[in-house]
Length: 346
Image (tube, rainbow, N blue to C red; front, side, top):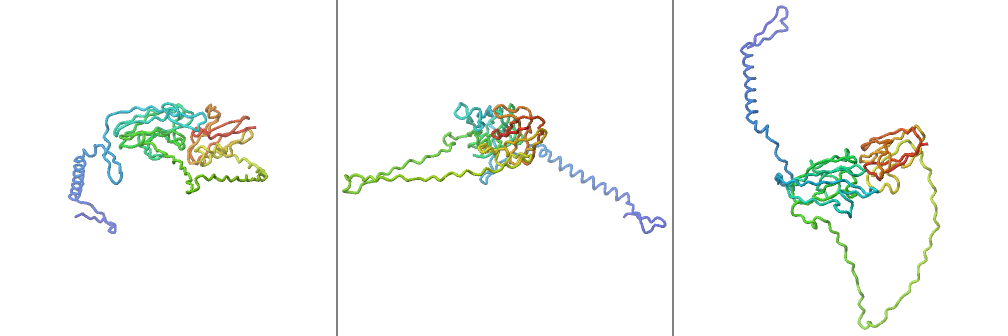
């Protein structure tokens, strides 16, 4: 039992003191807990220092076995290439040329080692997926750069990929829109024939029908009916009244969808695509698209001229530049070179 003292004149505030026996008992209990905990911890030492279990993939409700490496390495060298108008993109060579988007043959467990370099003038990134379209499902470890941090012209990188099952995989540029423009190749794993991997489009055979004359009319000549030509009346063309151009607000938008080719046909990859300002004015570019863009002075066929460059700026962000000298300034997006604009400073 603990002892209680009542100092003189302060009986309402007793002081409790623990006996030496109780203190010794408490220390014994705490020491016992430490000993038992240490025994449990060091008894499981092999577990704590072991590697985590191999990752398994859930497919069709069953757990797939871990991939067993074959020990075979397959080195693959790829380069990003672009057509002169940037409408067609590819690996190694453009369509119709040797080594265009080469097929890669491998077996389950082989290690494919990629050495990729950007020899084009746009921005690119790399990855492997089993998805037949789009840029989702990129396999971890196969990535080189990313859509938000791509390879600039002249840059490169290495990655590797070990297939875990037979089938068709795809190596692609992971920058949105670039796969659709042709930057995609196949990895054929296991017993997959090239014919089976291709999507065959069967053209319908033309059907011809011949009329069979009724009995007794075989020798009757066919009656020819001459049709009178139709007279088409073309109404007079009414020219639309030109709308007054809205005043420039100081902001140029990279609109939604500009990361996909087509906006250049209506000159709406930047809105407005051409503006006139005075010396000393500042222009703000707003990325209203879902993909990252750049605003880089120069023209796609010749590359940046060094006057201004936003670098990569993400969706929902802005870039601004003040023009202190008169002149005409062309600019474009290095990620999507069909996006071009023009600023006239007077």
